[in-house]
Amino acid sequence: MTEIPNREPENLPRAKSENFWIELLKTLGIAAILAVGLRQFVAEARFIPSGSMLPTLQIDDRLIVEKVSYLFGSPNRGDIVVFMPPDKANQICPTPPSADPTKKPQKEAFIKRVVGLPGEKVQVKEGRVYINDRPLREGYIEEEPRYNWGPQTIPNNSYLVLGDNRNNSCDSHFWGFVPRSNIIGRAVVRFWPPNRLGGLDEAASNN
Image (cartoon, rainbow, N blue to C red; front, side, top):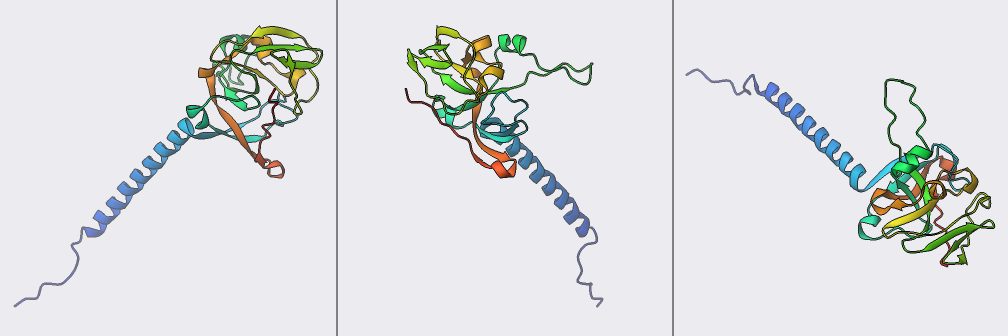
C-alpha cells in the first residue's frame, strides 16, 4: 500500500497570506473610521496662528479641543472656545490669501474667550468690561482695552467672545456675537511646546 504523505495542501500558505492582508486592511479601515469619529465628535488638535490670545496662548501653541462637554451643557464665562466665525467676521477679518492663486481660501476656525453669556448686557468702557453694569475682573488679558463698545444685550443662544490680547484681536467687539451652533468645542490642554505643557487657565469672574 502506498503511504500518503502527511503534508499541508500546497495552496495553504497562500491562503494564510491572503487572510493576513484582508485582516490588515480591515484593521486599518476600522482605525481610520475611529480616528475620524474621534476628531468629529470627541476631540481634535489645533494650533494658534496669531497673537490675539496673548498672553494666555502663544503663536504656534498646540492645543487639544474637546467637544463632549458642550453636548451636555453650555459654554461658561472664561471658557476658551474654538468656533466657526459668522459671515460678518469673515468679511472684517479675512483669511490670508493662499500661496496657490487657483485655490479658494478656506474658512478657518477662530479661538477666543467667552466673556458675555446669553441675555446679559455687556459694555466695554474705561478699560474694563461691564456685565449687567458690574465690572468684570480679568487677570488673563494682555492689557486693558483701549476702545469703548456697547452697551449691547446678547441674544439668546449667542455669546460675546473676546481675545485676551484685547487691542489686537478681531473679535466680537468688531463683528458681533457667536451663535451657539457655531461653537466647535473648548480648548482644555496645551501639549506643545513641552515647557508649557498642561491645562489652560480658565480663570473668569463670577460677577
